[in-house]
Image (cartoon, rainbow, N blue to C red; front, side, top):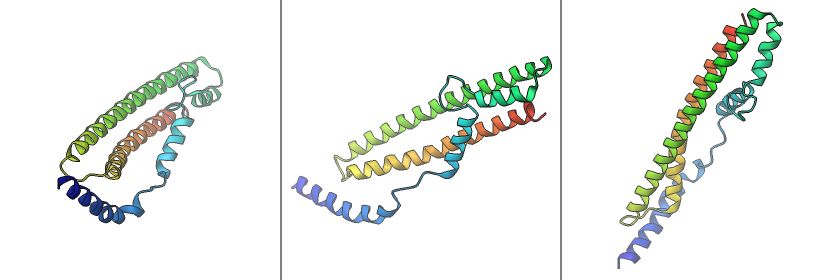
Length: 160
């Protein structure tokens, strides 16, 4: 009796609950997040670690004109940019780890609860999507503050 009732409840829940939310599932990529990603990539903060900041370093070298005073400022600029890059990557790693741990925890809870109440795999996917959207707002704040730090650094060293 219980498996039959459970499957009927799952069927009813799927028909009513998911049809309401069907249209809002696919979100286009956030243009602000794309701009932040492009800026961080251009400044050498995100992306491959090889040259890290080579575009910004080249701009600083061009602005310096080769005097020894400016080369000290140039090395200070590179050191601070490297520090910003390291902080960004450390915080991004923490964010990703927290997101993965929380997502795993919620999925385990939902699977456990699905033994006693109807929770479909689609609902679990939807919850994971909600969690990722919430965590992406934290990621956007990290990227915004990193961009601000880079812009302040540029204004201090390259615009002077």
